[in-house]
Image 1 (spheres, rainbow, N blue to C red):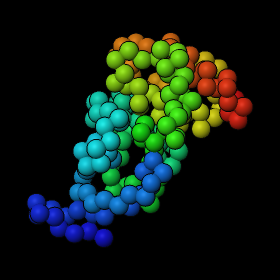
Image 2: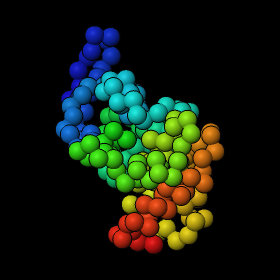
Image 3: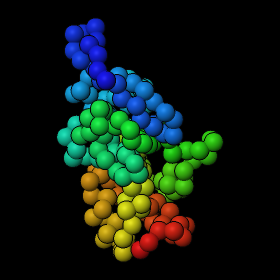
Image 4: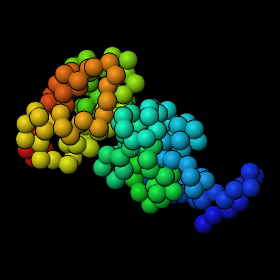
Length: 168
């Protein structure tokens, strides 16, 4: 369903699950999921980096798979489940990956951290991680300008070591 907004342009109704909660919004057809999150829904944990899908700062989980929110149109969220960094902690308890990033000091400025964490969780869900070089390759779409890569890998390896259900 669509409707003309005050600016004279068509807006489309979008219904999806965001961090476990049902959401219904309206957005122009050209609005990205990233801009919807940050500007309309005021969830600013997902960062805007390059706006071209090259840095990974905007990585979120769509139906459990990692995607760049800057390349995903908001209208494509309709009927799906989106998890942003804000949706990982449960009942005030940080997600194990968030804890591992803190314990391994896997960030400096922290700008890329939400995308790194969401990407790591998506990568783990994909499975088939065989060795350290796989981690590096599978995380290569997420850039860290501060160069915290060794600690990011250590945090991911910590979670993998604690997770019995990950297929290697």
